[in-house]
Length: 550
Ligand code: ATP
Ligand code: MG
Ligand code: MG
Image: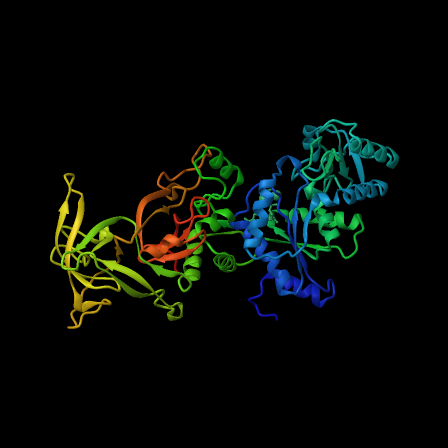
């Protein structure tokens, strides 16, 4: 298939397979367990998994745990949950870079024996100074020409704990005059007396990313090592390592552009601060775009996949709009979610001519665009709740909802005409009175008379009172993500908690992650952290109005 719609990575893989460079495809997702994954990582997960799947190949999950200071078990658990949730099935292929510390050590010894690595005593500051700049070549390390024997001995001493942190390093011997600074004798091992979550105190030397990554890929038999654009300049080093360590059928690195969202915080540093300062309710706060947040907010894996696909795979950096992500979840849920009755800002509506104490059950379609979703019975009675904004004492022009003397349709129920209302001492409307026309059951009149407004309702006697949370961007979009001092420019209204929303009774049984459309109010999902059995808390995923046009 050579249709132009194939992205450049597919084209590269097609070519490799056609030319026999590889006879299969094997990819991996290699996160560092130092934070929660975000929407950008979803692109990497779905791309790597997607390529394996498309070509009938394999996909590995691998923790890049070569940096023991930053790793946390909590992060590993969350990453696994996120990858599984997105549907990227690694079967039993869950690996850790630390599984290969022995091989990495052996490879370093091999490089030393080939005269391709040496132990350096430069301090970090000296190292920086010797490295040179983009316009000036680097200077040779005074230790660059140590003998193989001496290097072997010193490296063994490094391994055996004879040096303090930062006092020596192992450097690859490549080219101090290379125009690519990454090739100017990069450090490949450092001394760090740290306890590793998996290898404990076995090692006090740890490999650097650029040395470790190609080895991890090669050991696992990865064919296409897909990574983001900032590693493009590291590819010559990736290739140098795989060649000098003499791996057979070595993997190939291909870089793609990161996914960025406009006006959205993804930086770990910033999220960490928000969590620590208690501004958000953890890494999975529904206002963030970590995968855990998106899941908790109510996004589906399908919507995220649609979004990532719409963003496309390319080499050019670009930013997507959050509104596009919202578009995707609306598209996904509009034909899947039941359309329910829920009042977010309730005020009582009393039908004075409806029999007192009577409840009738109206049959309502679950989703009028999808008849196969069936119907449900919803109680209706003399006292209802409606949205406060659906009544006005003195309506402006073109207001077609309730006002004294006006007739409207109660969705799927009856026509009602407003007769009066009651206010408290503060001028707040506490009750609206109306009469109904029994001949309009189901929402249509027998005599063909029309009404312009349709409002929704919930029967007061049977209503479930629940907490509903409405969200806005945690960033104040007017002024951008960062303030001049580098702090986040926060929106003080990013969460609105409604304690007494009135919902139709069936919603009282909803459980974590259940998703609904609340008619006229948007799509909602049951919060997984704060809901209790019989007392669901609802997060608004997205309103029904779209600012995004395809
Ligand atoms: P950090 O060094 O701060 O941890 P990171 O989150 O980019 O940065 P990893 O945890 O190593 O680093 O990420 C795992 C994989 O996800 C990497 O291959 C990385 O390139 C990819 N990735 C990270 N951010 C994005 C993004 N915004 N869009 C696409 N892929 C991304
Ligand atoms: Mg990361
Ligand atoms: Mg990283």
